[in-house]
Length: 617
Image (cartoon, rainbow, N blue to C red; front, side, top):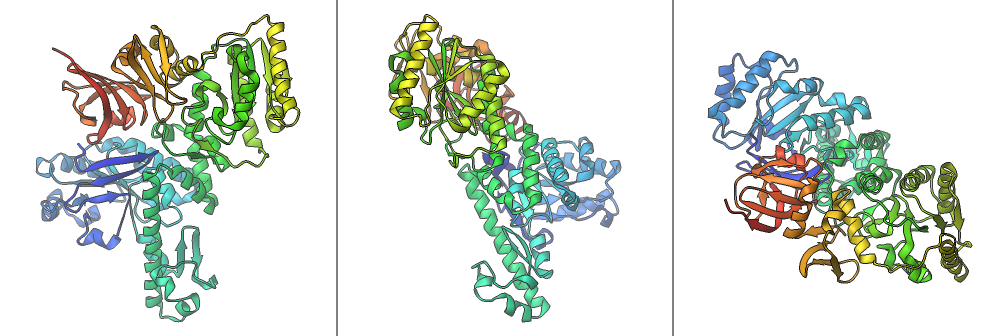
């Protein structure tokens, strides 16, 4: 059982944690490689080949047994079943119960990971890591598979691999521990490391850095030095740049913007760019580790942004969970720079033009990178939390993605009439979808959607549609429609029916609404545009059977820790609203880790409880 490692903050697969040793190690962390053999917090016992027997290994462990240092057990490059049996035996020894232990696994024997019993080690070490440099596909597949096969609450260490250039994507992949080996070696090879890559000193005219080393010298002076002195200075610079990159990644994780930084940083090399794209092509690894919402703006600045988990997840939920309640007129509108769209000047003009006609009109906004955003979902994450560079030009990937989203929406939701108040790429995408589906679309914009002529054209087109379809203006209840749509989007199809069996009343200013049922507070929209449940609302959702966390027999007081969780809904993600079920307590709160991770972890907060009720019996 993992005892000495705890994850304290997550941002996708990247995380901040701590090894609870005598000298606590906060991760991500860079080890000084010399300290592994001396007085550092982590001690490596080296190779199996230097020990004659199991007794020799135990005698060596005895030296560090009471030091509260993490001991990496011996490793052989020719790992065998016999050696794995020795490791398993050592991990189970009662004498070593209170000793933090690490084990080394060869990347080639990852599929034999079952030979080492999981959960008995506090840290795993990837051996033969140089093999990961053979190609980005091997790099991504091997690390993600390794991370998947070990418990989530164990640290992962990759030796002799980190550089200032690749550190961010290594952290993003879920690696916690690194060392300064390559920074040292590069110095002795006359290689100058930066976050933008590695540069031979022989070709440098200036040193593009203001660290302590670079402030006091220049390439010409360095070249004149003796080899040893020059190497020491270059190694010192390289380590400083590695430390600098580590500090940046920690801040990006804390601020929830690690993905944005990785998208930027991967541009430094084709290898890293390919690695990120390959990682996105197999989104399960990222999806299960990505929160359902975050407070930060999602900056979609590159092609890779189209493959972000948040973007794909939003599109999938609109396709599978959202169902338009209106079958009259569909009005397609362009997005706006300001979010939510309704508060922008552009959309205020659209809303004013439609006026009392909105009761039978379904408004859908076309946007890159989100595809299609029904008006009722414009407040939820990420629809109200993204920003993109606006140039008026849409590349092929953007067009194909938005087209696919719009086509799926039109296939699922049928309307008597479709009106598109669109120009430029928006109009082209809409027409392509309509042509493929054999639908007729009326276009109302005359080149500038907010011009008086265009707005009048929009209103008249909707009026004519009403006349043709023999529809009348109907009372518009935007707040109720918004709550129902968000409920299905957040908890799954059918949630809105369960939550609105009784008449609800919505109060408050857009978008921070409070929902009441039978004069009692029932739900609230939170800072992510999602629903916070009351105890009564949670009870109404029980029959849906989703987003539930079952706990052991204890009263609900404060937070639910992961060891107290006995079963969860596997679709739960960090920041999801969850229902807590136990024999002695019932409550609602916000998930602080994914459902699968609650089941694996032996440390950490699983759910922040907001409301709880004691149960008798």
